[in-house]
Length: 218
Image (tube, rainbow, N blue to C red):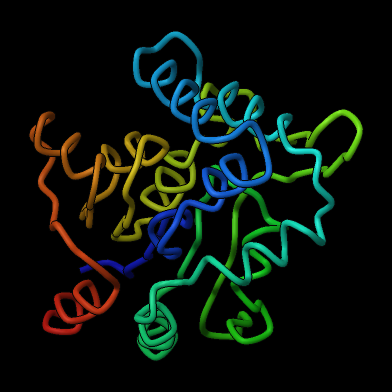
Protein backbone atom coordinates (compact mmCIF):
# COMPACT_ATOMS: atom_id res chain seq x y z
CA UNK A 1 0.00 0.00 0.00
CA UNK A 2 1.19 3.51 -0.77
CA UNK A 3 1.99 5.94 2.04
CA UNK A 4 -1.16 6.66 4.00
CA UNK A 5 -2.38 10.24 4.49
CA UNK A 6 -5.22 10.83 6.93
CA UNK A 7 -7.57 13.78 6.53
CA UNK A 8 -10.23 14.69 9.08
CA UNK A 9 -13.01 17.20 9.43
CA UNK A 10 -13.06 19.30 12.61
CA UNK A 11 -16.56 20.45 13.63
CA UNK A 12 -18.70 17.59 14.85
CA UNK A 13 -15.86 15.17 14.09
CA UNK A 14 -12.93 16.17 16.30
CA UNK A 15 -15.28 18.30 18.42
CA UNK A 16 -18.35 16.77 20.03
CA UNK A 17 -20.38 19.85 19.04
CA UNK A 18 -20.24 21.91 15.86
CA UNK A 19 -18.59 25.16 17.00
CA UNK A 20 -20.23 27.26 14.27
CA UNK A 21 -23.71 26.04 15.16
CA UNK A 22 -22.92 26.55 18.83
CA UNK A 23 -21.77 30.15 18.32
CA UNK A 24 -24.62 31.15 16.02
CA UNK A 25 -27.16 29.57 18.35
CA UNK A 26 -25.83 31.02 21.58
CA UNK A 27 -24.16 34.30 20.56
CA UNK A 28 -25.74 35.04 17.18
CA UNK A 29 -29.14 34.86 15.55
CA UNK A 30 -30.37 32.04 17.76
CA UNK A 31 -31.75 28.54 17.19
CA UNK A 32 -34.54 29.55 14.83
CA UNK A 33 -32.14 31.34 12.50
CA UNK A 34 -29.74 28.40 12.57
CA UNK A 35 -32.59 26.00 11.79
CA UNK A 36 -33.75 28.18 8.90
CA UNK A 37 -30.23 28.49 7.48
CA UNK A 38 -29.77 24.73 7.71
CA UNK A 39 -33.03 24.10 5.87
CA UNK A 40 -32.15 26.57 3.12
CA UNK A 41 -28.75 24.90 2.65
CA UNK A 42 -30.23 21.38 2.60
CA UNK A 43 -32.85 22.46 0.05
CA UNK A 44 -30.18 24.01 -2.15
CA UNK A 45 -31.58 27.54 -1.90
CA UNK A 46 -28.30 28.95 -0.57
CA UNK A 47 -24.75 27.62 -0.57
CA UNK A 48 -23.00 26.36 2.54
CA UNK A 49 -20.58 29.26 2.11
CA UNK A 50 -23.41 31.83 2.21
CA UNK A 51 -25.07 30.05 5.11
CA UNK A 52 -21.90 30.10 7.20
CA UNK A 53 -21.25 33.74 6.31
CA UNK A 54 -24.80 34.70 7.30
CA UNK A 55 -24.64 32.88 10.61
CA UNK A 56 -21.31 34.49 11.45
CA UNK A 57 -22.59 37.98 10.58
CA UNK A 58 -25.30 37.48 13.19
CA UNK A 59 -22.64 37.37 15.93
CA UNK A 60 -21.77 40.68 17.60
CA UNK A 61 -19.94 39.26 20.63
CA UNK A 62 -16.22 39.78 21.20
CA UNK A 63 -13.92 36.88 20.43
CA UNK A 64 -13.00 36.72 24.13
CA UNK A 65 -16.67 36.10 24.96
CA UNK A 66 -16.85 33.41 22.30
CA UNK A 67 -13.65 31.78 23.50
CA UNK A 68 -14.95 31.59 27.08
CA UNK A 69 -18.21 29.96 25.95
CA UNK A 70 -16.44 27.50 23.66
CA UNK A 71 -13.93 26.44 26.29
CA UNK A 72 -16.70 25.95 28.84
CA UNK A 73 -19.17 24.07 26.68
CA UNK A 74 -17.41 22.36 23.77
CA UNK A 75 -15.08 19.38 24.10
CA UNK A 76 -12.95 17.48 21.63
CA UNK A 77 -13.39 13.74 21.19
CA UNK A 78 -11.37 12.18 24.05
CA UNK A 79 -9.92 9.68 21.59
CA UNK A 80 -8.43 12.25 19.23
CA UNK A 81 -5.09 12.87 21.05
CA UNK A 82 -4.33 9.13 21.07
CA UNK A 83 -5.33 8.91 17.41
CA UNK A 84 -3.01 11.79 16.48
CA UNK A 85 -0.20 10.20 18.50
CA UNK A 86 -0.69 6.96 16.58
CA UNK A 87 -0.51 8.84 13.26
CA UNK A 88 2.77 10.40 14.39
CA UNK A 89 4.11 7.00 15.49
CA UNK A 90 3.23 5.51 12.10
CA UNK A 91 4.50 8.65 10.31
CA UNK A 92 1.14 9.05 8.57
CA UNK A 93 0.57 12.72 7.64
CA UNK A 94 -2.50 14.11 9.43
CA UNK A 95 -4.43 17.03 7.98
CA UNK A 96 -7.44 18.79 9.51
CA UNK A 97 -9.80 20.13 6.84
CA UNK A 98 -12.46 22.53 8.06
CA UNK A 99 -15.26 24.67 6.70
CA UNK A 100 -14.85 26.50 9.99
CA UNK A 101 -12.15 28.83 11.20
CA UNK A 102 -8.48 28.63 12.17
CA UNK A 103 -8.94 30.91 15.16
CA UNK A 104 -11.51 28.55 16.67
CA UNK A 105 -9.61 25.36 15.87
CA UNK A 106 -6.54 26.85 17.57
CA UNK A 107 -8.48 27.02 20.82
CA UNK A 108 -8.73 23.23 20.84
CA UNK A 109 -5.70 22.04 18.90
CA UNK A 110 -2.32 23.10 20.27
CA UNK A 111 -0.09 23.03 17.22
CA UNK A 112 2.91 22.97 19.51
CA UNK A 113 1.72 19.63 20.83
CA UNK A 114 1.14 18.33 17.30
CA UNK A 115 4.19 19.98 15.81
CA UNK A 116 5.38 18.76 12.43
CA UNK A 117 8.68 16.91 12.76
CA UNK A 118 11.16 15.79 10.16
CA UNK A 119 9.32 12.53 9.51
CA UNK A 120 5.73 13.50 10.38
CA UNK A 121 3.53 16.22 8.93
CA UNK A 122 0.57 17.83 10.71
CA UNK A 123 -1.38 20.70 9.22
CA UNK A 124 -4.67 22.58 9.51
CA UNK A 125 -6.46 23.91 6.43
CA UNK A 126 -9.38 26.13 7.38
CA UNK A 127 -11.07 29.46 6.75
CA UNK A 128 -10.42 32.65 8.73
CA UNK A 129 -12.79 34.76 10.81
CA UNK A 130 -12.63 38.49 11.50
CA UNK A 131 -14.71 39.22 14.62
CA UNK A 132 -16.50 42.58 14.42
CA UNK A 133 -18.81 43.69 17.21
CA UNK A 134 -20.44 46.33 14.99
CA UNK A 135 -21.11 44.65 11.64
CA UNK A 136 -20.93 41.05 12.81
CA UNK A 137 -18.21 38.48 12.34
CA UNK A 138 -16.81 38.41 8.80
CA UNK A 139 -15.88 35.07 7.26
CA UNK A 140 -12.82 34.93 5.00
CA UNK A 141 -12.98 31.78 2.92
CA UNK A 142 -10.13 29.76 1.44
CA UNK A 143 -11.63 29.69 -2.04
CA UNK A 144 -14.63 30.71 -4.12
CA UNK A 145 -16.34 27.31 -4.20
CA UNK A 146 -19.90 26.93 -2.85
CA UNK A 147 -18.54 25.48 0.39
CA UNK A 148 -15.91 28.19 0.82
CA UNK A 149 -13.28 25.47 1.19
CA UNK A 150 -12.95 22.69 -1.36
CA UNK A 151 -11.79 19.90 0.94
CA UNK A 152 -11.63 17.43 -1.93
CA UNK A 153 -8.85 19.44 -3.55
CA UNK A 154 -6.40 18.47 -0.79
CA UNK A 155 -7.34 14.81 -1.19
CA UNK A 156 -6.92 14.94 -4.95
CA UNK A 157 -3.46 16.47 -4.52
CA UNK A 158 -2.49 13.72 -2.07
CA UNK A 159 -3.67 11.00 -4.45
CA UNK A 160 -1.71 12.64 -7.26
CA UNK A 161 1.37 12.26 -5.03
CA UNK A 162 0.59 8.56 -4.83
CA UNK A 163 -0.73 8.59 -1.26
CA UNK A 164 -3.46 6.31 0.05
CA UNK A 165 -6.12 8.73 1.32
CA UNK A 166 -8.27 8.15 4.41
CA UNK A 167 -11.01 10.68 5.17
CA UNK A 168 -12.98 11.12 8.41
CA UNK A 169 -16.09 13.31 8.50
CA UNK A 170 -19.67 13.81 9.51
CA UNK A 171 -21.50 16.44 7.47
CA UNK A 172 -22.39 18.41 4.38
CA UNK A 173 -18.98 19.98 3.76
CA UNK A 174 -17.42 16.49 3.72
CA UNK A 175 -19.36 14.99 0.83
CA UNK A 176 -16.99 15.78 -2.04
CA UNK A 177 -14.01 14.63 0.01
CA UNK A 178 -15.76 11.33 0.73
CA UNK A 179 -16.26 10.84 -2.99
CA UNK A 180 -12.52 11.26 -3.62
CA UNK A 181 -11.05 9.30 -0.67
CA UNK A 182 -9.75 5.75 -0.92
CA UNK A 183 -11.27 4.97 2.46
CA UNK A 184 -13.99 6.81 4.40
CA UNK A 185 -15.01 6.90 8.04
CA UNK A 186 -18.42 8.56 8.35
CA UNK A 187 -21.15 9.34 10.85
CA UNK A 188 -24.35 11.38 10.98
CA UNK A 189 -25.47 12.89 7.66
CA UNK A 190 -22.24 11.93 5.89
CA UNK A 191 -22.91 8.26 6.61
CA UNK A 192 -26.40 8.69 5.17
CA UNK A 193 -24.97 10.40 2.10
CA UNK A 194 -22.44 7.61 1.54
CA UNK A 195 -25.17 5.00 1.88
CA UNK A 196 -27.42 6.83 -0.59
CA UNK A 197 -24.58 7.25 -3.12
CA UNK A 198 -23.13 3.77 -2.79
CA UNK A 199 -19.88 5.05 -1.29
CA UNK A 200 -18.27 2.41 0.89
CA UNK A 201 -17.62 3.74 4.38
CA UNK A 202 -16.97 2.62 7.91
CA UNK A 203 -19.51 4.07 10.32
CA UNK A 204 -17.97 5.19 13.58
CA UNK A 205 -18.93 6.77 16.88
CA UNK A 206 -15.61 8.27 17.95
CA UNK A 207 -11.87 8.28 17.27
CA UNK A 208 -11.38 5.27 19.53
CA UNK A 209 -13.42 3.24 17.02
CA UNK A 210 -11.37 4.56 14.10
CA UNK A 211 -8.06 3.90 15.83
CA UNK A 212 -9.02 0.33 16.68
CA UNK A 213 -9.94 -0.42 13.07
CA UNK A 214 -6.86 1.19 11.54
CA UNK A 215 -4.46 -0.21 14.15
CA UNK A 216 -5.63 -3.72 13.29
CA UNK A 217 -4.48 -3.19 9.70
CA UNK A 218 -1.34 -1.06 9.91
